[in-house]
Amino acid sequence: DNDILGVLQVLVGIFLYVNCLMIFTFLKKEVFRGDTRYILFAQTLFVDSAVLFLTDVMLLMTAFQVRIHMISCIIVSVVVAVLKSCTPMTLVAMCLERYVAICMPLRHADISSSSRIRFFGFLIIWTISSITALFTFVTYLCGPPKFTVLKSRAIMLLTFFLMMISVIIFTYIKIMIAARAASSEKKKSTSKCLRTVLLHGFQMFLCVVQFITPYIEMPLWKLDIIVFINVRYSNFIMFIIVPRCLSPLIYGLRDEKFFAVLRHYAVFPFNFPTTAYFCQNC
Image 1 (tube, rainbow, N blue to C red):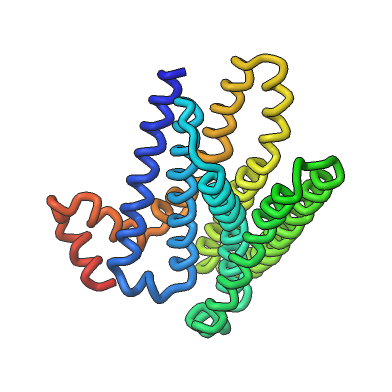
Image 2: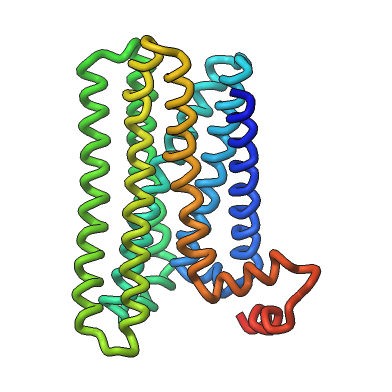
């Protein structure tokens, strides 16, 4: 158990370092701070880093049997629940942004640069993200969860998932149609958008699956505690760590402009001339 816990700490440390470096890169360049695409990416990085840190702290406290006050536990649990719901919602917004960029290029500049649209967009994301967490919190205050309450929560999560997957399928189909009709010069960018939407869909699927992992783990706790611990560690890697390492891969490494600036700050002491020149012109 200690060996597995140590490996998890190394993985979490690496991903937190990469995410923090990318957040730093975003904050240092005004060209990124003014683009809705990169603002959504930065929010994903911030939320994913917070979820990784908080869930890792709770994992360590569980492993070493550290007790905290119930009120503190409730607050942390609600915050983590809101953040976990925020990631898939932000991914849906990023898919919609790619849809507008490819299928509505003339309106993309106006929509992506509008502060009012951004405000309402982020308000919708955080409002919907809070619903599941607040529902769980209210049902906890009402007493032990009954079958009807658990069923209602399951229906809410299913609706939540179907709504997001419908948007992603819609954007993928529209971008695919646009890709077939595009000229040879634009086919490369539209094909890249298709792959981005697919990666976002896979990432969102992993994020949503984490909501049902407790229902898988709890029966195992009564059967075999060793199997329960192993399954819980596996779920932590697959549905907490893996989805949150895909965001840096999708945008941080695949986006040429962002990667050039990221590389500049990652190797700052060496300061490659070509990268520094590019960064100065961003």
